Length: 143
Image (tube, rainbow, N blue to C red; front, side):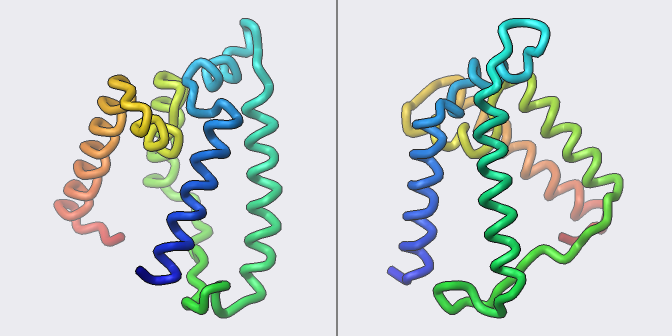
């Protein structure tokens, strides 16, 4: 097993544990944050703020490097355009997140708990991703 695979597993495990400890795998936690007219729960905002802070620092450090910590080539996003596919995708993601109370990361973590609702969610999410990929091929969009 390569160092990159071990590092990816360790980082994924740490991310999953963080989601569990913070309660972000609970749809009720997300819905409590989004329900500003009811008993609002600001904890998701604090978790997101912490994640943004860590991300800002990590991207600042990464920009100054040509190689990742394990020696692989540094591949950072370069597209800075806000276009229709981005806006449509973000809108669909946000609506799904608000309705379901869960996003892809926590849903995958919830699979470990064999939650039937999350199994259906992940299957539907996977089908949506396959449909998007097929639609891009049909219309000739590259990704």
